[in-house]
Amino acid sequence: MPELPEVETVRAGLERFVVGRRIAAATVGHERAVRRHRPGAADFGDRVRDCRIEGAARRGKYLWLALDSGEAVLAHLGMSGQLLVQPAGVPDEKHLRVRFAFDDDGPELRSVDQRTFGGMSVEELVDSAGTPVPVPVAHIARDPLDPAFDAVGFARALRRRRTQLKRALLDQSLVSGIGNIYADEALWLARLHYARPTHSLPAADVRRLLADVTTVMTAALAAGGTSFDSLYVNVNGASGYFDRSLEAYGRVGRPCSRCGTPLARDPFMNRSSFFCPDCQRAPRRAGSVRRVN
DNA sequence: CTTCAAACCTGTGGGC
DNA sequence: TGCCCACAGGTTTGAA
Image: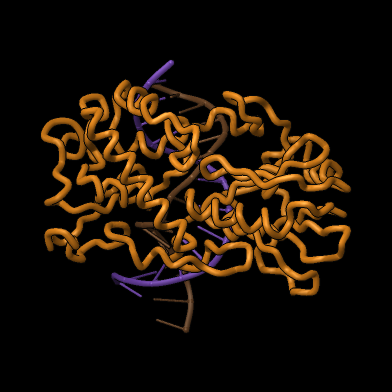
């Protein structure tokens, strides 16, 4: 499941292998893969043809290729998206959605996506606090690895919310790049329960949690990301190995490495939360006891 | 305005 | 062996 470290790994691969090259043609093999591109698949191809790729950028889980036309190819990997750099002769992947061929006849860029939660579109760039971003990214907050990330503003905004802590961590308009895996990992590191009310969380705890988010994401990035089932891979098709370092996610019944208590799994937001019932105590009032979610 | 949850999609694996 | 269903989950959309 691509979250920030996985998307950043892919972005770095795109920077290395496609930036500076000129697109000869883009072929859309599956309409749904470009459903966010309102003018349709044919227009998608027309917009990128003969454009040179000037850069590969990212905010949170979104990434985009800036074109010399002034527009950008925006991509989101969703649950199962891959961007692969493949020699033109390699047989098509089963779930190949979009193919970019280049005028240098070098390796193609292929968008492969089993579940098609992700997708691509060609977007105008707009200013977002001094940074040009594609229109659909304008409402996405900066991520914790962004040098311009505003930790104080984040703490203030989080404590204004009346919701549960993990819901806030997953809200991409508050802080971006965090998904279910790294939310659980950071909460475990910070010894905080997923249902802790944000409104009463001390600012010091917010700072500590944010530091733990950064720690786990930085470590995951160094490992090339997390992968369970090879659905997430870098542009060369290789998986990361951070899954060997996970402390909480997916480890229901296994002993907590701090205290030995078997880890638990609760249903949460139509998915799962993994946590240590001893290190991460449930809040007394609001949250997991009173309501299921 | 804020908060929440259904819907989108396909492959896998457990239960029967 | 085969069928059915739960599960994986990021984002958008619309409702309350």
